[in-house]
Image (cartoon, rainbow, N blue to C red; front, side, top):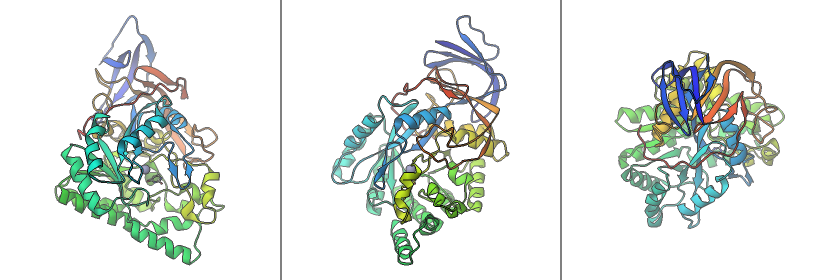
Length: 457
Ligand code: DUC
Ligand code: ZN
C-alpha cells in the first residue's frame, strides 16, 4: 500500500517543517514539498502535526504484583498504547529469583506478548541475580535484541545489593549496554513502614510518607557513586523529585554519563491525591510515589532544558477491586497506574500548549531520544526516508476529557480522570499500515518484536 500524507507539519527534535510524506509498504520512502504520486492514496493532513511514532520505554503488562496480575496484558495494553500514538513499547521482562536464567525470563515474556500486540514491542531485561552464568547470558540477550537492562534497589523479589549493582553495571558497560535503575532505599522504607504499622497508620495517605523523596535521592546518590567507581553510564528511571534530580546533576558535573526518565504522573499530579476520601488514594499508589508541586516544577524545567531525556509511563494498571487488596493495609495495595494511552496528549496539552516545552522537545522526549537510547534510531524515532513508517497524525485542535468511561484500559479507573485535553491523536500508522483512524483503533495485533541495537544518545 502506498500513502501520501499531504500538507502536514513534520516535527523532529530540531524543527517543524510543512512537508509531504510518502509511505510505501513498511517504510517512509520520501519526504518533501509538493510531492505527488499517481498510485498513492492521498490523505490530507492539513493543520495536523506529524510526529514519529511515540516510544514508551517503560511499561509493565501482564505483570504479577502483590499477589495479583496487572489488569492490562499485552493485548489490551498495546491497544491503548497505539490509540495514544505509541508505536513501540519496551516492556520489562524479568529473570525470576532462585537460580533462574535470563533466557527463561525472556521466553516467559515472549509467551505473554507474541501475537497479541497492536504496536511494536521490545523488552528490557531485569536482572535480579548475578553470577557467572548470568554474566555469560548478556551476549545471548544482545543477540536477542536486548541491549538495556533493569536493576532494582528495592522490592524483595527484585533487589540487587550494592556489590552486584557495581559488578553488573560495570559488566554491561563492557558490552556497550546499560541499565535503568529503580532507585529507592529499601532498608529505610522498611523501617518507616514498620513505624507506620506500629502506630496503626494503615491508609493510603501513608504511602508517600514511608517512601519519601530523601530515600529516592539517597538511592540515586548511591547508585551514581557506584557508577562512578565502575566508570559506567546508567539511567535513573521514573525520576520524581528535586532532591533526586540534584543528585543526577551533581554526578554529571563530575563528568558522569547519567540518563534520566520521568513520567506524566510526576509532572501532573501531586501528593494530595493520597488523602482523597473513600480509599480513592489507593488509585495513585505507585513507587516511587507522586510528590509535591515544587517537584513537578523542577521536572518540567528539567524537560525544557534537556536534562531529562525521556518521558515514559511506568504503565502498570489495576482495577479498584485489585487496589482493595490493601483496604486495611496500604502496603498490600498493588502499586502502579495506567498511562500508555494519554502520554502524548497530556504532554502536548500541559507541556506544549502551556509553553513549558516546545513541540520539538516533545518529539525528542517521546520519540527521538528514546529511539537513540534504546538502539532503534533511525529505524524509529524520526520521519525520514528509509525509516519505519511509524507516524502519529496529531490534531492540535482536538479537545476532550480523559475518563475511565472511554479509555481503552482494562480498568475502571484513570489517574487523569476529568483532565481536559487540547490536542490529541487523529490517526496512527504502524510500519505503513493505518491502525488508528479518527482516534479509533481500526487494526489490531499487527505489532512485531523489535530487535534493538546499542545506545546512540
Ligand atoms: N512501580 C510501580 O508502582 N509499579 C510497578 C513497578 C514500579 O516500579
Ligand atoms: Zn516500572
